[in-house]
Image 1: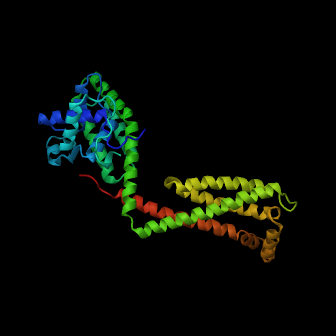
Image 2: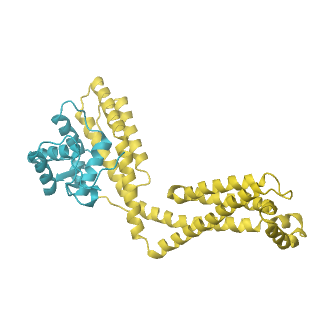
Image 3: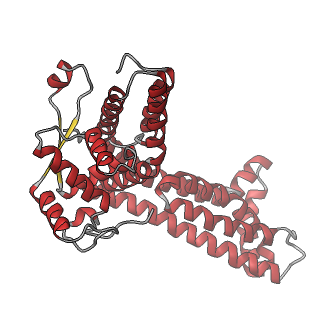
Length: 121
Length: 251
């Protein structure tokens, strides 16, 4: 698998940012499966994003500061008799990157040169 | 998990969790547990979001399986990244004394191996071109093949995952290379052969087993150096790995 260059944001990551911002604006929790469902809803031709692809992207985005991740309070999960979720929040930087992508045409190919620090190198 | 689970989607879920356990093995416990917990949550949400008819449950099983299969390359790539990141962090966190000790041990193994390879290949070449009736015909071939195999062993030693195999390979190869060098010595240099015979003459007067042990002493010393050097270089790698496994990065 080729390594991505520093500061590259992939189309999937733009989609995740958009889906995350959309869920946040509706006060809905943002977690892996809710994002996968939102991504499918945004493009009916797609199925649910593969586990590995989704969680790898979420991990890298959290490391790059586009998302903030935190485990849900176990008491909440227990009260609803389900496993606890890892909740995500789109950060200010993530919102800026999504905004910048919306301002220009949505990139079909990966966009390079956005300064996200050394993490995405 | 959902009470309406069918056999197919239960099997798919179990398989996906087993796959997660497989690709997170060896990662720090916090990272591995976080990945498995997040996946378990995803599978639970996915399962509860699906309908309860047998057809819907079968479709769910197929969807779970396909999501896992399509994400396998990303899972493995992520694993590689996390392992590399962890090794970098641990290498920085290790006391300088430990790092220096490991580096010195590895350097000693490289130097000894380089000497052994150069001697084996040059002596093998020389003996092949200057055959003496005192040397057995097969000795140059063993030297040349041994030299090439020692190069392979050095390559294995240079990779952290196969360091032990490379070190043991070098130790084992020092016996056929040393023995063949002794046999081929008359073809390499008459002077060296005479000197060797003078040094080893007292050993030939010993009982046969002791004589053999004495003749093989240089090879045994060389093999011991390779093994000790490998273990010293590897012990630090293991300690690094142990430190990495105990790092808890869960939130």
